[in-house]
Length: 135
Picture 1 (tube, rainbow, N blue to C red):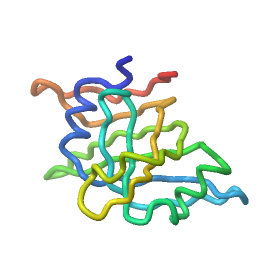
Picture 2 (tube, one colour):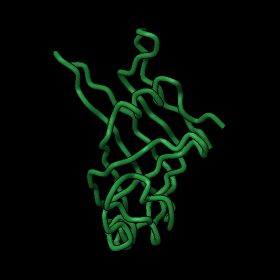
Picture 3 (cartoon, rainbow, N blue to C red):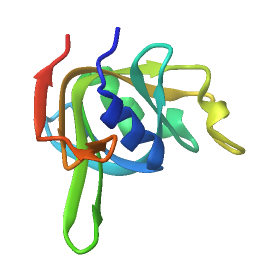
């Protein structure tokens, strides 16, 4: 399966930080900066961290698996770029330690349902805004 475009994958590989939004039992949103990686084998996003199993975001996934994840930046003079991934979050209990020293083995895996991107380029060509369901 190839959910992400070439331009989206190249952009994600160039970034190190994104923002993960989860929802708690009361329906309240929670947004935090996190480290991530594109998992090419499964065509998903993996979120790693320190003490992941004790984190609010990890607990939130149990009660509501709906998540949103945004990777963005702005190039000078004013060229915003982003990839937004809406999907289902899942607790994964092994593999997070591969993010680096001190990272927990637990991680969150996001299976995309909708991908929205803007301001990216492929082969030097500007790619228009894209929004699509990918289930």
